Image (cartoon, rainbow over the protein chains, first blue to last red):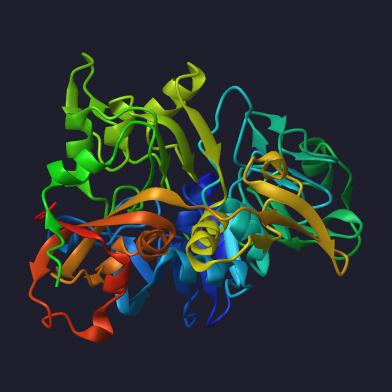
Length: 220
Length: 234
């Protein structure tokens, strides 16, 4: 059985479509790049000014002038392009990013998201997160369903918002939830997970309005 | 043609306590490290620094001995030179949070796209930046948010233009007239900042004669650049 993060990343990757411009947040979302479906060509965008970013550079491949938004040396694909922060955020804020994937501390049934601050504990800054959440065409939250058993999906977020009415889809190891006018609508369940299980791990109503599919798993 | 070339020490001599300074670079990628060092050596204090981030802080081993020095704006922060930091992300430099929590430094966090546009607005004669980014968040209460506006049923924040006394930037190739080319991801905020500061100092990794830099490769036109510091491979 693949590890939970791999399961989530693999499922998110199924949302990719050919030609997409995609921004992946740090941590779990970066794993999505490992599961791009065959025949699908995407362009990874990095806030600091890259379209066509590849993986982390090692050894002789390291170029000191090419880093990702975490300051880590990366490679780029042939045909990649570099640009300044105004163009980079023009891409993000102007709706030219088809999909962004990020983690979250809390998400609520209206699609409000808290991901950048826990007052008094953690305040690393929002970086490009507020711009991405507001500007990307599709916002997917990829995270474990609970934080050590405590829910992360709520009727109303209690931490400071990073963006309002922005999240379209949540992918966890338990299933896939879309956010619609009704709130959390269950679309898929992971093998062995029941509607009751996912409801018990969610602090807001999980609506079942149509067919529930089985969430696909990465090949062993 | 006026000779624009000065030393890092001469650059630091211009920047006095209490100045506002834009620092180019993104997680220190493209940062003017030589000018940062000279400012630390001068022990300048009470700066307002405008930078994408707080750079990298120093790294310590298990005995608390510094094994790797800070980089980018992290050098100024380690030296307690910064009174106020306007940035988008400080998570990769613990010293920022330490000084902020002790009340030694004010940190004003701004969304990255907004900060880029606010600097651009400052340098381009615009009265502000109207953006939906930050609506419903603590950015509504930022001192750099002029007002919240609703236009055609959509909420926006009007963000203030940002300017500074100085911009210190890092260029890959600079000609002696001050035209600058930035390689790879070192472009980031640099040209935006060059337009928005009273005095612009570029640290050149490589300096070339006028005419050697293809005009089509110039990213910051020379008219924005007041001084050039010859740096070297960072």
